[in-house]
Length: 145
Ligand SMILES: [Ca+2]
Ligand SMILES: [Ca+2]
Image (cartoon, rainbow, N blue to C red; front, side, top):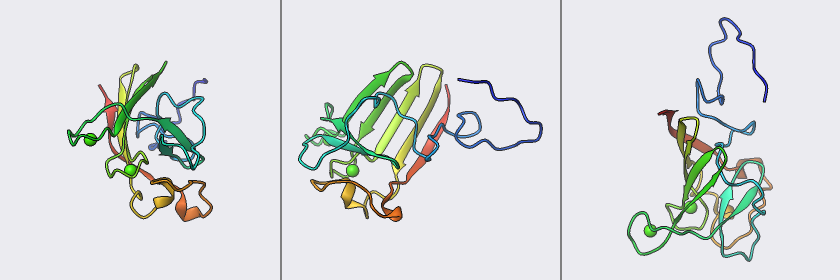
């Protein structure tokens, strides 16, 4: 961690959590609890978390948030906060994430290209090979409590 100097007149700092939601350098949401997770594999029954740089094996859902009898959400946490991961369309690829951090920041995202990128869902393997296969996350809401 380092302190960034203030630049007078520099108006926009995407991704720093102050003027926009926290993002990784690749533009992914900064989520909690994924450190050390394995990469998703073709034969796993786990849900997967598509990110620009990798597709993670996120584990087995533990909650039925919408009451349809199928569990589609799980929560992971680490020393920064916690993130709820959910699969809204049932293809076993996470497409909604909501993070609340202990520093008071929060953000919610959805996978904006989930439907046309089945490589990240179902039982197909997920290594993206084309640029347009990269998952794109769109921030729905962010701020500070
Ligand atoms: Ca459900
Ligand atoms: Ca999904």
